Image (tube, rainbow, N blue to C red; front, side, top):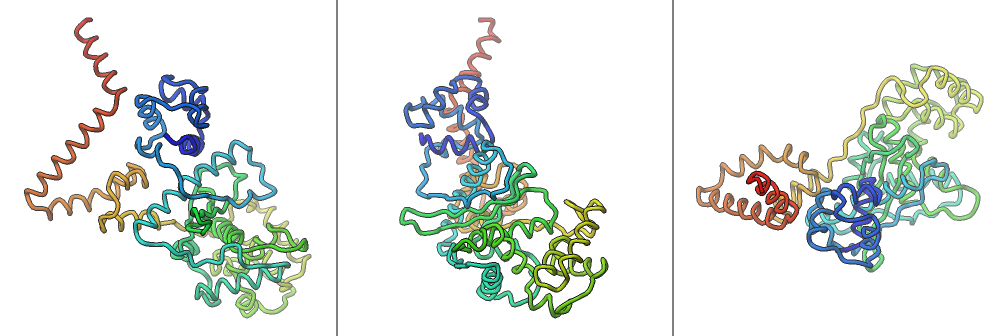
Length: 393
């Protein structure tokens, strides 16, 4: 068994050593779990089966060593996340990204067309130019981006949503192969945030992925924020619509800009101010007004959240092409999500089979089920105990 894999899976599920030991009905102690994770001891098959059940993964998953090195971009400097939360989220995202690399490779996606940490900048103006350059590279022109998630996923920038405390805004990761070549990138955001906040966070993480900040004139955080706002609302387009310089803007105009660029009122005001379209004082007045109305975290005129679909689409593609087994797909999507999506297609597939093909499929399914139970020592032991007790022995 791979100790690093066990640790990543445990942390990804937010489990302590005590939690995992308890989940196995205490057939293994936390001290032994620690030894397994450090490669100092080897568990018995019975323990391995119990660990896999407790973690909700196939036994084979515990034996998968990673040939990838996943490097997260540093958590935002102002984060108040505990070290435990940071470790859990990083492990969860590492596991998620490794799984997506499997799907990438199954479908033949091998090259990332993204300048990872290559856009060198020394100022906020450089960050603005970098956003324009990425728009040009992606062929976006100056039009508003209707779905940032679609644009990112279509270029193999994986969008991952995670359950996390409110203090978590986002994190970006890059996976490298054994030759130190980037093979996958991901931008993670907290699940359940409004669409406008989701888009700004994703654009911010995209900035972290592509920017390489040089010198001391600008911090990485400020550079990423400037990149994000410039990516979502290009300066030239905004100036054409609003004007080069304004004495004031009203709420109706801000709402229209919010709907057009799918950004929050606060982000729109900030963008107008940083471009010099409105004064610092007028921008500050708007920030005070927005806060006073209780719109600090959730604003009216909702922008719908964008849904990542790359993983589901490409798992189904891999199944259709015969390069991914259904049991592997269930592990990638989760049993409930997979069965919900596949019920109708499986029925159609069965209808199109000959009687002999259906018979062979049924025999294979029965054989796999028998094998699974034969390998499950805990189930066998439990069954024998029940039989013994029913006989009064």
